[in-house]
Image (cartoon, rainbow over all chains, first blue to last red; front, side, top):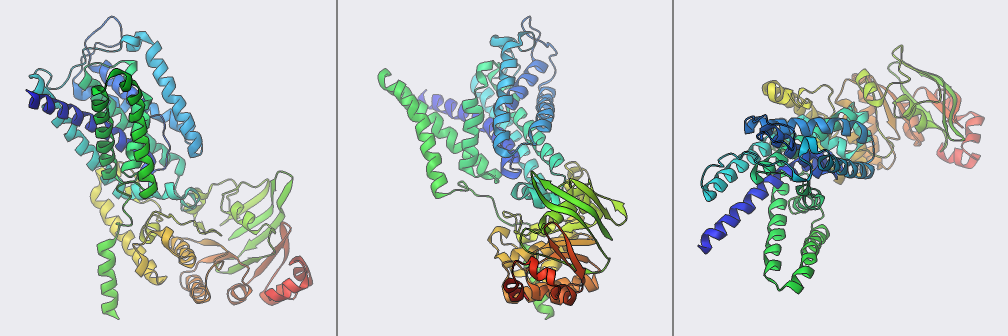
Length: 326
Length: 257
């Protein structure tokens, strides 16, 4: 019995790792490869979660919708909606330098949260959207969880592969160039405004997908779920700690931080009440300390950005040919 | 091929470039000299589209390009380097060059999926060209090094290399010799000459190293206080009294010569 409980917990954790991986991968496109300081991840997460929820949920008196579309449509819709929201935001905010962009995106995320909370006709207000269909939801509890876990991991793998391919393509090289030196990139003919907007939308769409997976896993979404503490700041810590500019680092960071974050909750729940309240602050403290240590000893994260892999084998053969010719 | 007409740039109450006019002929290496604060780099920034002039006109290949931005000018064949090296520091030296060629198909998010084959083929061509450029600059051994880790002189060479990765017509070099050691400097001079003679690049270069100016440049334009003081071959400019005066005292001027 104990073992089953542990397995359930592990699966539950792993699903969250998968969902947050999407947020971290999305942020890595924006910050890690393109240098865009998006501090409003929770906003895109919310747009994705609500869009998919409203597209797929059964009819309800308290919110818009009742379309009952297939879940796949909901997920694609979530990506499109998050990308579409990112477009005007990016258009306005990407003109700012990175620190101002951070402030602007925090503001935008907060606006999205308030809109979700107060526009009850659309989102169900504080009651949120319920009865969101969940793929494999009809199976028994453990199998349903396992099946959803497999689905989430498959999606993470596909997204990871797609991003990796995009980043290793000339597009990724260009984005990294723009990130490293804006003036030089402009002087080399790159239209940085348009390119940044692309990266911003791309990242936001991935975040929106993460939000959708979250909503369908929970079977419901309420404004409380859009907590910037987790959906924005914890994701940032995951990326910085794991290694921004490296997708594998992002995934590793998600796993490490989420396990520590959850395990610490596990521990604090065992404590007597008077300590438990204090211990809540210890969790934040531990994560902060960990971040400090990593930044002190590995400033580029646990897995730093790989350097100059674009031509390694070719350079060697080229040099061989040259020396042979001599 | 480049005409500057009564160009002015005002920063607050300070006129960095003041009614400046000159032209650059095709196939030349034109030197732009003058004391610090003469407005040389500002002029470069105006030509390259990094700054917008307060007044005046810039014509490139007969076309008015005054209001174009840097990236648009690049596509017209006007390429620049920077006084302080602007390498893409987390990219390898090779990637720094591979990034440059315009209209790479793989820079389009969707082309990258729809026509992967031709993206790959183009990438191979770009890589080959970048490797040859590194070879030409004698930088092959640092191809996979992060550009941020290169020496100052190597970064300068790399910047010159970037201009070679596109079909440049006019290249603006901002102090290519600054911070470059003697050996590397001679090599840099040779490269510029080869590019000028064999590839038909037109250069404008800002430089304080008078040996380099003497060796490479004809004509030489001397700027002071935001406008052109004198234009001519090196000997004419060097022996002009106004130039010596502009260089703040004869001693400095003579030492430089």
